[in-house]
Length: 475
Image (cartoon, rainbow, N blue to C red):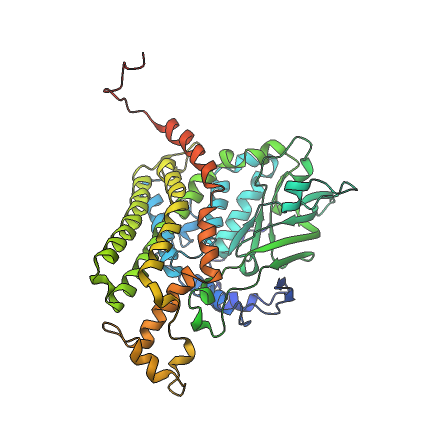
């Protein structure tokens, strides 16, 4: 792959990104093809936000390092550089309220971990390094596709031995031809490239599934089948969903050619199964997700606090207790990020990373804390979630305008501004967008109980403190 000699991010603007979405990518939304995601009512809000995010990568901004590259794509050589990357994660999360589980900085930092430990990829190490440099210079919007279709997980091969799971079917001088599916590729309709690798451990006889590669979304033979958009019409009736619904999709590879310079693992089961410990990507990914979890909790708290103050419920003792509990959730998740960033250390590959134990604790606790935060928001916003002004009521010519504006008047705001707060709260607590958000956080690291058991191993392995009070009681 040729490495660009242009200055970092040269020409990469929000405008050029939006224009590039009409690149021939095959995206089906609720069974219908989407010709241009930048202008379709179901997708234009998310596309516009991503364009704004690209424009935020200014040379003097919080998202860009001294070398001009995005901090999410930057390896850290000191604790200060780790914390700078964390501040970039926080800035991106605040721009979206933490509501994007696959904001582009997530896979950017995963790819960066792979580049920092590229020797894990053996004969393809230089491919990983070159692709990372290319993605960093272009500030590519990446996401990944790693889960297998559910039929294969439960039913195994079909009557003729066919499987739906993505696999290599042949090679030629140009690259590897792959066939099959990967699923739940969050953000994929809007991404530049997909990074694909296995999620589950592979058996020794599954060498054809031992694959890791990167591929542009607009590649011939690749089709994305997305779930329906949660964006509403008008957008103001779902102010969060219409702006931050990143979409999830099944990716169908119909004999797609992956050029050799985009292939990182091919046929090596050991390299695929040891991808996470072999690259240290977990600390990178968990750092981004822990920051996002903290900022997302802040968003819920701020929305609940504003709803309570506008309605006057902030004077009620019970509501004040609920707001206090929400504040405690925010501070717990923030404190775990601070602890992880304070405990930075060199990893096995010579890069500096966070202490993984607080990051793992954040992921484990957030699976329960975020659903609880939404319960508290529901209780605080109360009946306003069921009945509130809609966008149409903001039109002075509408039948209910004068009545709604008066009926919902709150402390310091008129009824229509109060209604906008309640619509946002309903988006997070009652609508499909909010329900998906809860499920996403609950299962972000897999089944919560399974990860709790895993955290026991992580926590116990990091313990080195004696307990004098207990010493001798068991011996």
